[in-house]
Length: 184
Image (tube, helix red, strand yellow):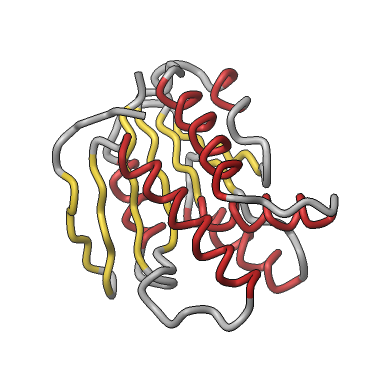
């Protein structure tokens, strides 16, 4: 059963760097699951820069179907999933293109499915990065509020099964869940 470490915080708070540093201390094959879509040349440059920071890591790019990946990841691997925020965004975009609007129950199902896939895999440790978007102003439009709500539900789901949870502020990690109460 994989140990899950959830790392959350605001944009540019140092979440990914912290996750990478923690994961690099653990022995095992390193696999980076990237959920970021390639949407323009600026994003392509960011992706290229980030890949250079991950020497020795295999990168798997997947925007939507994360659960099946854990069936094929070798045992004793260390996985860094970056990030849930973009995954929820991608799910919203994908369903919107199909004239379907995601709701809270569907997001719970997606998250529970992914959580079970991780916990039932042979992966050693999984570091999951996500944004905390619920601490600011209420978004002015319905879609923004829905995104905030769905990501909040997703974050709560993974925080409940994580053995450790960290909140980053200005590059400083604060451990907010030190125990290991895994109950999905």
